[in-house]
Length: 174
Image 1 (tube, rainbow, N blue to C red):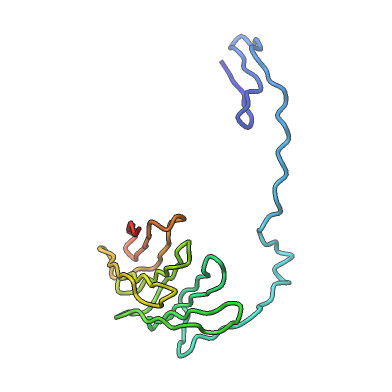
Image 2 (tube, helix red, strand yellow):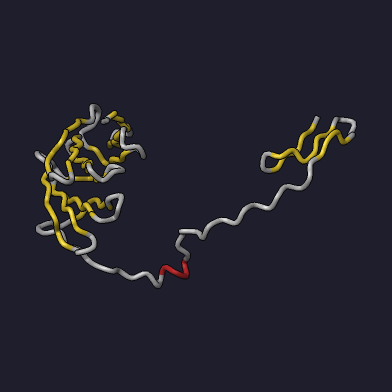
């Protein structure tokens, strides 16, 4: 028996002898897709910087992340500092310093924007209360001497950290 399907609808089914057992009408044309958000090569040349923010006293910015609402930008440096910028005003709102950090390698805002995770080269992940600008929690990657990336799950309940040993550690944080 042979069945031919397109987009989940059976178009035809036949037995080995070639007898048509069933058929269905042609599938409906696909619904039009919304405009793509992919940047085309033609538009790349038209994209220009709208601002330049300079982190004070730093040589290298290792990581950046926008808050979910786009109002804040976190920029992390090699000295363990995280600069929180007010995007609309293009002003520095706060500087957070990871305790004992050998440099911040990654930053990520929680989906609600209330928490900022920062990973460092010592295998630590720091969670910051963004509104209060205080350190809320510290985690240590059990297999790592350096954490290279952090990310929150879409519901904010889980924190993932990738390290230089090829491991990803997950923490249930809420």
